[in-house]
Image 1 (cartoon, helix red, strand yellow):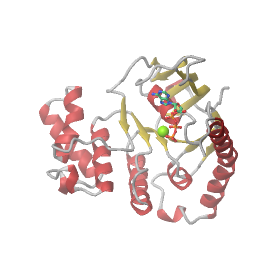
Image 2: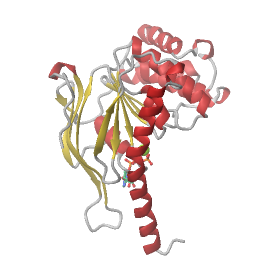
Image 3: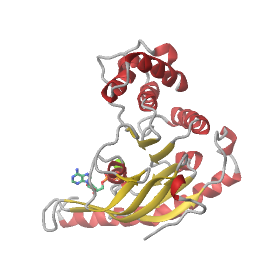
Image 4: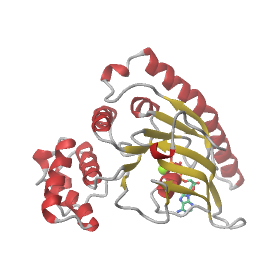
Length: 283
Ligand SMILES: Nc1ncnc2c1ncn2[C@@H]1O[C@H](COP(=O)(O)OP(=O)(O)OP(=O)(O)O)[C@@H](O)[C@H]1O
Ligand SMILES: [Mg+2]
């Protein structure tokens, strides 16, 4: 399936996902899973694309394939016109749900580490770390250790580490998923501000329809496993998005549309899970 986006030319495509399928194991194996099927999509430069879909439909798999952490069993991904064949730390940074900060390093040291692996010279590392910490509002916590921060602050630190790499692409897998709703809302607003300022392309996986509606320029809704894109919803609203967007009729209408699209797919997933559980004698 090919999905075309209006007015996108090769120079404005940051990520080209071309017929990507992925399976784990071989057919007949007890743990064989078809995770993704024939997924194609162009992500535009500077756009925030949200991926939503039922649990297990292959969202994280697709993110790993885009980031070069996993080779797809069919199809390919192109970044800046080049085929992704492995991790591309100069082009792509990740933020995961669990922030993976080193507990024995301060926030400043944690932010520095990513750049150290990239071979960024010391003086530039310090300048970039300061900029990234200021961008996420953590400049006063540079010398704190992760355990001395709240969950939201730890995710900000993880975001600062990713920002300091100054990649054009950020891949975020439920980055605010472990946080309470209010903290999540504030981080979403901050991310929208960052997006308005920086020329970043972001692919963002979330289970929250509200978060997707608030953040995304487009939302790709996935079908049940093996996942593929069922529908793409465009959200025409400039960044930075304001808190009152959340209470607008437009927001509610988009959120409801996403809910309706997802609902059937989630039902299919639940039905399949209960059938296989019954087959295996799970109550
Ligand atoms: N390393 C792996 N080995 C074997 N199977 C895997 C592996 N990673 C994922 N899978 C399977 O692939 C399918 C898709 O997994 P994936 O993590 O991409 O889903 P997801 O859409 O991110 O789900 P969630 O919303 O729950 O995070 C699942 O059925 C999962 O069991
Ligand atoms: Mg996932």
